[in-house]
Length: 192
Image (cartoon, rainbow, N blue to C red; front, side):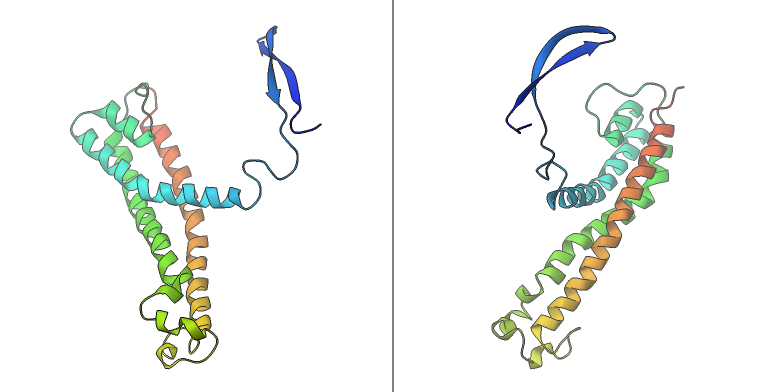
C-alpha cells in the first residue's frame, strides 16, 4: 500500500460500529517517528530533560506538602495539570524517598551537558583553539593533555570519556524515572 493511500477503518464502541473515518496508513519503512537515528537521540534528550526537571519538581512537592497543599504537591510531582489525584496523597514521604536520587540525576544531567563543551567540542576550548590549524601534528601546548601531543588525540580521548559517561547516565535516568513512578503510585495516587 502506498503511504499516501487513505484507508477507511470503522470506529467501534463496544460491539457497535458507529461510523468510519479516513486514516493514513503508516509506512513500513524507516520513516516512522521512533526509527532511525532520531529515535535514540529523542529518547536521550527526554531522559536528560527528566534528569534536570525531577529535582525541582520533587523539591516543590516537598515544600507544598509541608505547607499542607497535598493535592497540588501530588499534581506537581506527577507532572499533571488536570484534576488532583484520588485518595490522600503523601507528598512529603514521596519527596523524601526520591529527592536523593533526583539530586544525583540533576548532577549527572549537568555533567552530561557540560561534557558537550568539554569533550565533543574540545577543539573550540580556549586552551586548544590555537592548535586547530594543525590537528594531526604534535603541539607543545597539547603535551600535558590526555591523548596529546596532538589536538586530534586529545579531542578523541576527551570525547570518548564524555560519551562513555553519557551512555552510563542514560540508564540511570531511565531507572530513576521508573523507580520514581513506582513510589509515586504508592505515595501519591493510592486510595485512602
